[in-house]
Length: 421
Image (cartoon, rainbow, N blue to C red; front, side, top):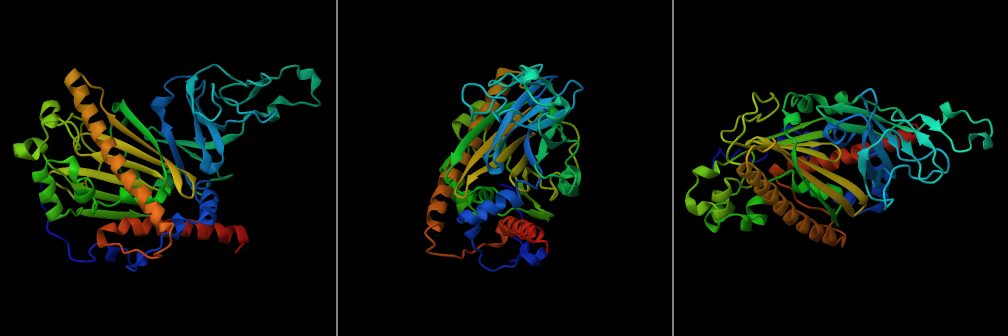
């Protein structure tokens, strides 16, 4: 394992004195009233990633997204002109959900020339215009040009599709992302089309799961059984500390060193890793992806493990040094439940061996995620007991402080604007 000098106490938190060092409260993760404020103050104001352009590869391609936190369903579609647009998934006639298959609350996707309501066959073109009304003459003063689908603000950055539910977004998507994120431009996202996706309903507040992936203090302990005993014991004794943290606006970054698994002693590896030439850090045979963007590996680690970019509020881009990346989404469904979505992206495999290596990496990532989710449900159940109302955080948990402080700031800002202050 690569080793780095241990920074002095307070070495990261001291860069962000506004976060403080006192114990923190997780009241924001157990209070139903605060969650209701979050829904309006954050999820109806911030830019939210809902997918990638590969999900709508050609004219007429579409997918739906169920967003309980925003109390809506949306349609994302590639129009005749090739533009990507988003609309609320509601017919202008009786308010029926416009696009769905057998189960109205399940997401769906496909290709079409127009959208037709199942209830009374009103039709809309790919730009959302109302084009046909059954028995149109029966209606009173109907002007079809006034009754198109309700649009949702939609912008694309590096192939990622974002929506914003505000009447008028306070910032453009690019302004919202800021330099730390836009410095990732140029990464070959378009080449990463081999995708593995997992989805789970987690009985914990969405922020608690984000917290789990914002620090690596837990990794040598919680995930010890995922490694051979000789390695996990040494890791637990040594601990792990990431060499770089950064906060910019509402977003956060943690960057870590890595390992070259194939250089480790035999007893440090699992037999399946040798067979598949892969594991948690990804396939051993790194693809040639060209020059990486300036925003990656800011600590210049060698070997470099990963960079985890936490995009506020609920989207994570995690880049692995071995040439693949993961996305995480945390979609709140209540104050103590959310839907977790994780996707691993690789270049298209050229051989069966490459495919197997990708599958082992994806399965390893899933196992780690399950361990985290299981622990977080235990956390949620106990903080709801309110036996304790403050919790200690160490220096390398600085990003956790920031997420909870940023969430509170958005809610406070919303309350002020609502009150006209």
